[in-house]
Image 1 (cartoon, helix red, strand yellow):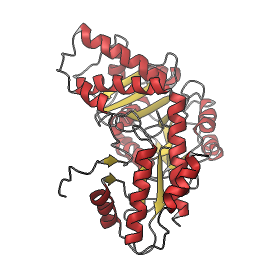
Image 2 (cartoon, rainbow, N blue to C red):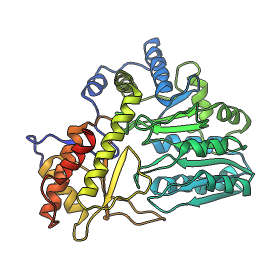
Image 3 (cartoon, helix red, strand yellow):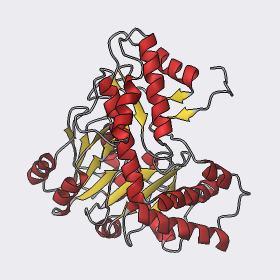
Image 4 (cartoon, one colour):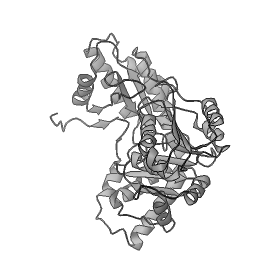
Length: 393
């Protein structure tokens, strides 16, 4: 691709997302050593800000060097009871990834059986389904669920599911990677045992940090289960250091500094206002897709990412390349998995993080223009009219 400096780049992919200029400037500051009181003061402030965005009064939120997958894997392997079953729920690519992790570690961690609860892509698992599985398998020690499945733009009723799991001996490990900071999620009030996210989504940071919030039952489990077959991903090490506002291993110092600034921006806007902005932009995107005659990919849509199937005759890669090269807008395609093959069949746009109505309008206008070029019968201005009606309504 030839660089076009005259066209502003708008990153509307559901991760990485756009990073605010103030965050980039903070990350450009001279590096400091992490074993100093200066770093500890910065890290203490970050920890307290993370608790507020996770909506927990006192639960620890660990900052782990690595991706969201790193953080989620650490939670999975650190908290499962040897000799127990696990229940892993999937309705998309990322739910399947958490299934794969327990399948991979089954022998090492002495997992009796990793039960796969699969729902069709684009639909959400229900609390009733989870309750029935736990009733049939009382020896499950961990349940994994994705709150907002990025690959299918689908959200589940996490509050209801957490209520079910909290009444059992199982811990609920929740993938909040595209929901924390974008959608209502109350760690304490909903009784979520473990909550995981990554820095490169609604947290408005480049990739490189994963976060794990631990509820009281999860902290207790860490004391009961001894680590086996892992080292850096042992949450006990991270929790021990966290209690002194420190980290066990060298952290990405610049990312930590940048995350403080990003969280400050969220607090200045107000977390509830951020949730509302994401919801409105997602609603506008769904309305525009429908107005253009596109079929949405989800029957239980997320407010952090919106997706639609391509109409017949539109080729994914050339289409997204045209949206990028002709309009400076980056959108995402689809993914394949065990539950469905959506690569080349769908497009997705983000409404989380550092994104506003101007970004959304630009993306929708670009998509409409390229669909018309591809031979679709769409009246010019249809997408923006539908989106505007939502945002002005």
